[in-house]
Amino acid sequence: MTDPRVAGAGVTAFGSYPERTGRDLFAEAGLEALDQSGVPAADVEALYYGNFMGELAEHQGHQGPLMAEMVGVDAPATRYEAACASAGAAIRSAVQAIRSGEADVVMVGGAERMTNIGTAGATDALSIAADDLYEIRAGMTFPGAYALMARSYFEEYGGSREDLAHVAVKNHEHAMVNDHAQLQKEISVADALEAPMVAEPLGLYDACPITDGAAAAIVTSEAYAAEHDLDAPVRISGTGQGGDNLALQDRAHYAQTPAADKAAREAYDDAGIGADAVDVAEVHDCFTIAEVLALESLALFERGEAITAARDGTTTRHGELPVNLSGGLKAKGHPVGATGVAQLATIAWVLDGSHPRADAVPDATVGVAHNAGGTVASTTVHVLEVGE
Image (cartoon, rainbow, N blue to C red):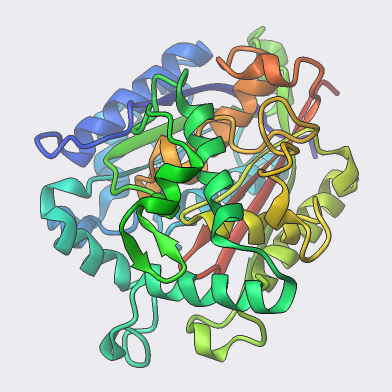
């Protein structure tokens, strides 16, 4: 059993492209990944593809073989759906396929087209990641659900809207040099605090945008990479997945994310490391409070301590543990089915030194990617490392 190598990745610019189809977006990312890796499409033995709302946004299901066709891959193709963690689940299967010897080369990716159905349509489509019978019909929205989580966190551990504003400011600043980012715009703490309220205590700048985009990566066995002399120094050394009750009201805690706790423990154990080995992280900050919860579930901070991490500079690009150097979902954007692979690509590029923010962690050897679905009912965590 060997850990898969990240041989190459491709990510489209994230943003509002209502005129582009999902297949068009994925073709761009997938072909870029093939080109960057130097792996011919004929060598790809499987495509694992993440997508959440294709039936609603494009009236298109059965997208696996469609996307394989778009990148010239003649191999079995499977679509993965785990809400916003769809691509993370696809990555996990790719890791397992390569480790087991079932495949030597897998393309893993995802795409989402969202802006073509408008804000109301996208909001309605996103809502089906919650419990339709007991949440959606009662009027629950994801901003409302994460607002409940934020209020619970403040009550249990302390914290304020200003602490969350620092998370938004940090991630917008990180995105300024990321050509893939949707919101390359600096904001101030005052901007965040004075923005329209969406769901108390979360304002407009506490939420990620609605996004179109795609991402893809080529992962190979170590033997294939060596045989074909690929430049693939980064390996996926740990994988984990956790689950929780779908509906928020059925959870034991609103201010904790047990699914992410489980996924992190499994991924760290799989990689044979502890959280203290992590140099850089990409976490699922669909809302600013989600970054805080993720950092604590990843054991990068104790419970109640991540809320001030951006304010005190620890998670900025100048800090001890830079988080979301891409800009995160908050500023990079969140094309749901593509997000997990975009996170993977970012960590791989940071570790190999090719990301525009790689200078923040020039000696980094270990990174972690955290991808969550819904109100964190589904979570995947992947550990990436440089070298042996």
